[in-house]
Length: 230
Image 1 (cartoon, helix red, strand yellow):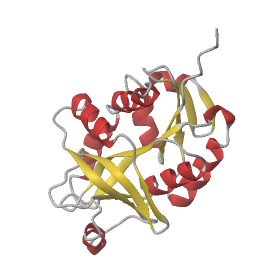
Image 2 (cartoon, helix red, strand yellow; image 1 turned 30 degrees about the vertical axis):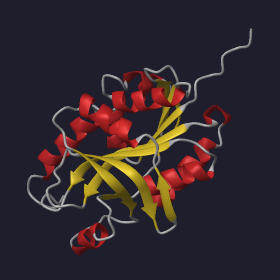
Image 3 (tube, one colour; image 1 turned 180 degrees about the vertical axis):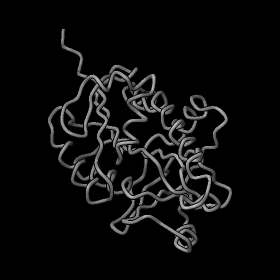
């Protein structure tokens, strides 16, 4: 009898310590905190049985590219699905802190990367975090915090949100080998709710709580990738 192949791993990449803290202190993320492997990375198991690594890349596209490329060189992560997550800035009027963004694609000046299983992520997030608005569309990358008129300029390109790491993370992932990729971000900053305004702390707490709740949706997305295709 031939041995069953090991389940494909999942790499969840975020930039900041507070984003990693939100993931690891959630009910479904506590197991990840017991498997510290290297600075910025923690390992555990998702509910689908496959190994899960949470990587803190550091802030900005250069740090994200460097960290993801290095970690995916590990044979233990060969073929890993990659999901970029954390906070983002919403670009469209009417977006609020705590809203979710599921990228249909990520893009930056070097090109775009289509995402896998967007509809499933939307469905699972709606179930996992009921009452939260989920936006879908292109997620664009930037090398700096976007302010003022830059929001409208980026919105005019068709993007619905911006962050500094998702595009670099997914581009580095697909360059390292063919694999499923996705990006899910929580809005912490929006046109009517900029970080510099009063109310920022409340919005930040809301976004943190939402990020603490998303792991079950990520695990279900990963589990679906492991199912045999008919």
